[in-house]
Amino acid sequence: MIQKCFDHHIQQHTYNADQLRFLRVMQAVLVKKRHLILADLYEGYFTAFGDDAVERMFSPPQISELMAFTQQLAA
Image (cartoon, rainbow, N blue to C red; front, side, top):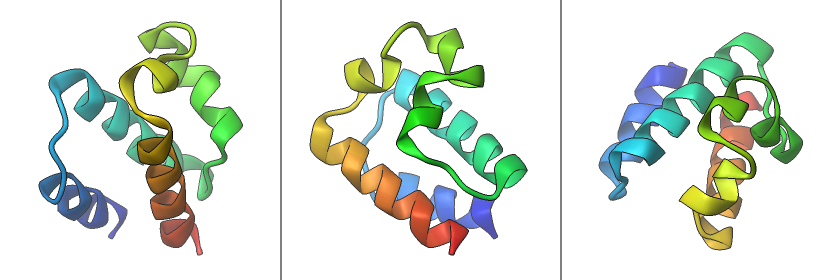
């Protein structure tokens, strides 16, 4: 179900290749942990993208939207 929701979300937005890879990691972490908080985006698997990657790849409104999206899926 989470994969289907991510796929739908991605279809509704325009993301570049790096952003898509980041989103797939978000998806995998969400499946594994069953929740995702903003601090998670600066740790673990996300460090492979570099320091503060989420801030470089996404605008603040996009980050807020992604966090709201993942919180809906975790509910």
